[in-house]
Length: 81
Image (cartoon, rainbow, N blue to C red; front, top):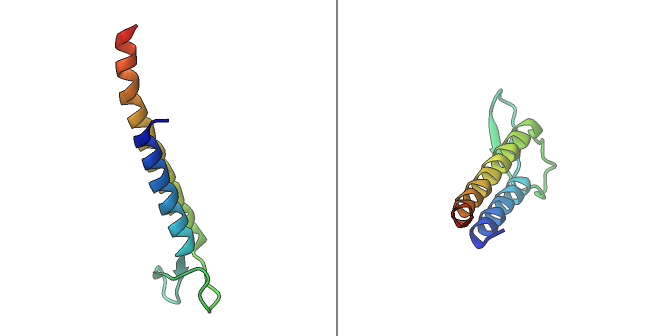
C-alpha cells in the first residue's frame, strides 16, 4: 500500500468514526433526521438504516479510491515486463 492509499484509507476511517460519533437520529416527523453527539445526555433514537447506508457509501467510495490509486501504480510495472 503506497502513501496515497494510506491517506485515503485513514480519511475514510476518520469519516466512518465521525459518522458513528454523530449518528442520525429519527425525530417525530416522518423523514426528519437530525445529527447529535452519540454520548449526549438524552438517549439517542438512532436511525440505524440511515447510518448503515452512510457507512456503506463511505466504505465503497474509500475502497474505490484506494483501488483506483492502486491501478495507476500497476500500469508502470506492466511496462517493465
